[in-house]
Image (cartoon, rainbow, N blue to C red; front, side, top):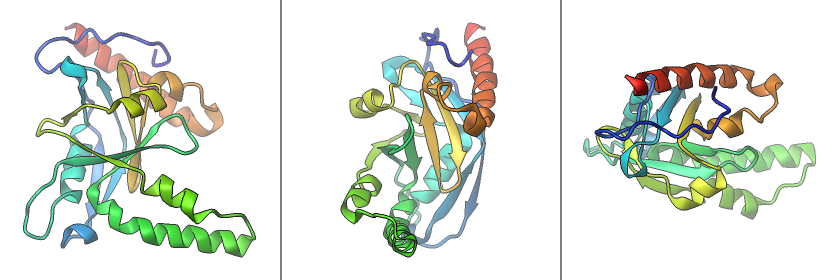
Length: 201
């Protein structure tokens, strides 16, 4: 079950296991105009050197997001703690150019509703991300602050969320209300079973 803390039995080659997901790409042009969308789910067990593995299609979308107008590719994953849920938010480099517009829209919506809005606090949430490199196989290491902040252990569950995706410790995902997260919880259980079964072979 996904809710259990299971130590990864994978300690061979590069150790981690990822279930393929689907990611759709959109747009084109230079890096600032590059937009990608993340759909579906993925799962990874921790491998050697504490590395996890990005799901293949998420990795493809991130590479597309990090490709500039000359064709040069920056293989970096943008990560930050989610302000509301016990997980990480992840997105590609091309998303950075959209954050100012997002901030403006959120402020306008808050003003229309007469709701409080602290632009500095929200800016620190949106722009407080860290760029984490990944290799051609999608392997990456989570910085300690994110391991601690999202209570990461031996497993990662990836949930597509459009312009970004969420990364959970499966045990933390299982604590969220079923009414909102049952779809993700069921997917996580299924992918965890597949990953652990494959690891035993």
